[in-house]
Image (cartoon, rainbow, N blue to C red):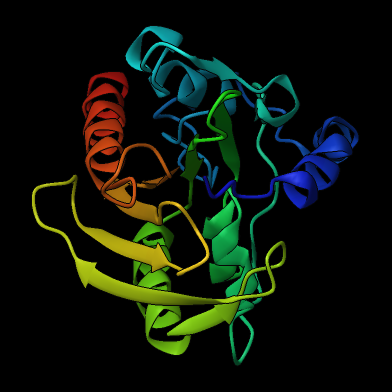
Length: 232
């Protein structure tokens, strides 16, 4: 079964606590107060709050367990956003659980983890990122652009060519886009979904099942979207 790598994400996040200490907002760990109108993070969910919206262990089928090395969140503080989209996206990022990084746009808070079936190596990843202003909508557009630019890429593990197809997906949040990754050398493909909920973007990845992970990816996205609407 195809198993999406996560090593790069784990290494990148290992230094996060130090970055948060140096750069994090000194505001409240909850929603910023409405009186702090000059605060660009006012009203945005913190990583602690986003973590509550992730699907719990009970959501996943028997055999799946959380991978402790991939469970991270930005806690009660915010980090400065960055936007550095490349002229051509790094298509190989689509092969990882943190595939949303392909947009080159980072948010101010996040929460993520992924669940793995050690017997089949099936992998299900979930992440939520919060953005300032209208940036979340820009992230979704960037996902669509990446799908257009990355019609295929080379799998870093098998060194074979992965085919990528994408489509807009109605009924998921305030807008969503789905990518399907297939490769003849894999037992099953991957489905990636990005969905916007206000200023947040949900990104999931699934190789679960025999449908390129599609049904599980959609079900998980819906679960997180509903939880975010209750949290906001």
